[in-house]
Image (tube, rainbow, N blue to C red; front, side, top):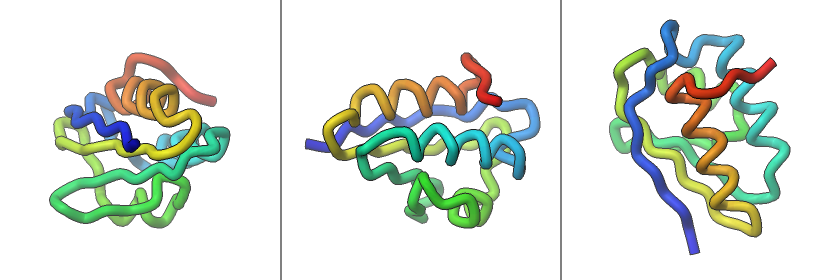
Length: 89
């Protein structure tokens, strides 16, 4: 079963290179397959170049999908990051 959550990104500078790198590092900690969707473009949530190619800015609507043993936790943590509710190093 896949867990999916659509959110509005509220990171001040969007998913620029440092934020995208933090997102990927956190995504890599999960066993689940992670996908990020914007405007029907789907990329691997564990791919820095893939994420950067989406050009995610503050106010954009994105969907985070995960499938695997820790899918619920993965979606919760990663969407919280994109909503600027938690910070990653």
